[in-house]
Length: 630
Image 1 (cartoon, rainbow, N blue to C red):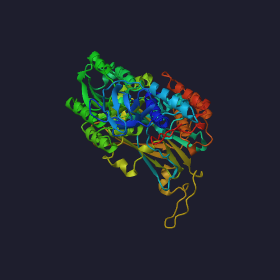
Image 2: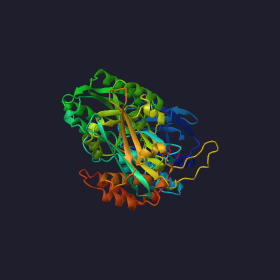
Image 3: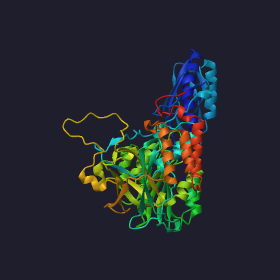
Image 4: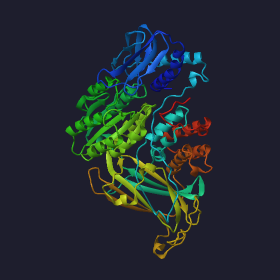
């Protein structure tokens, strides 16, 4: 259990339990204490600050306006103490008169107050006194993590939907986040499992990129392991890799969240170590500025040459957490700094690192998106790195990265930081193609139906494919993208209830072959890809026909299939059939191949841990901040 989560949960429990006990000991000669708690630096009110009457078991939390009230306080002199994570604890003497209200306001300075020991001790005492039906150890953390709802793609018939159109996705955040849950012995929330991000987390081996386009296209067809009469089609995009020394000069702005919610070890302390790894990769021609935001935004390091590593690292090391979260102001300032130091032909990028808890200023998703879309047109892209647990705003971070022509990664440790910011720095920092869209046409002579596995939040209308004003995903140097389609061959029954025949239109059997289709009878699907150059406005088109032939799948295809199967099981997909975790392990073990970094081996261990811990038998976490769980 992490300290940042425990404080809010335990504090709330203290209110529920200590208040009950305090009422029983109320004296006749009592008064009231009330006041407001604010941030001394910004004047912003502080919600959920713990206000304790020393020497008693009376406590409360401040409301959203920072106000508190303690009733039934014995008349006389008292010491009142206020604590909240990210601020220094403060106490003051208060004189309470019988039947009167004493006012005690607090202005807290940013610091690193640690209060969970006090709270847990008081909750334990209260629990023992009122004989609660459960122990304190069974209290579950108060959790405000949020994930966008995902409705799994269903099968479609070729007759009703011959085209499937979607934007690519090179984000990898979901896999690292899922790993975090499993390593903590928890089943991930269903909506935290984005199958395409899990598949694309792993590097795959494809041939060299040649020709006029910055990426190559690879396709394969085999049997679906969870339903043998179905086919599985793999469409792969592979961007050319670029050595670090050959990258264009970088104009980078680190936009770092240093609010109070970032104080735990898996947030700001890890963030500083992670960015130190990136700083070590900088060259003389690169520039870095550091903007931070908490109660307000500020520039802590002006744009500095990459050769001045000691100065950059010193600025990182001085950062401390405290205050609220002025995310909107921070983003505006970061873009201002990036614009002033713009490098023509260079990599101009803001790298936002946060737990995603924007709560002061222009914090609505709509306002953020409009600001970021405006700035990307100037050539400054946005990448987002998520940190920590407990209040991770996954849905918001993914959205702003997508609209900023960047990518989203989740950093759960130094090894992941090294993967994202060192091993994959080219893809993280350099875009080779933007607004990359795929459109797949299914041949009704060979295909009855299909479903796209994953990419639910990347689907596009068919007409969006040729509309160059529609935003889509970006492909960075060295990035690989895999999309899997489960295909129902013509003549095989569709795995969904049949639709009644139409009254006003004739329905054509999927297996019927018309004369106009005869010359394509050997084709299964036709793949079209549109993309723009990083600084272009007009898209380019690639086309690729896939023949109706199954073959021995490559190790990469089989491993990607194992990852997809695992994601389906975590999501309780009805399409997983009788596929099991043992099947996932067997398929992944047999396709492990060359695994120099050990990523595939780690995946196998995660699946084995899920099996041994019986995670699929657990109820997936539901992150709802409107209720307490025990």
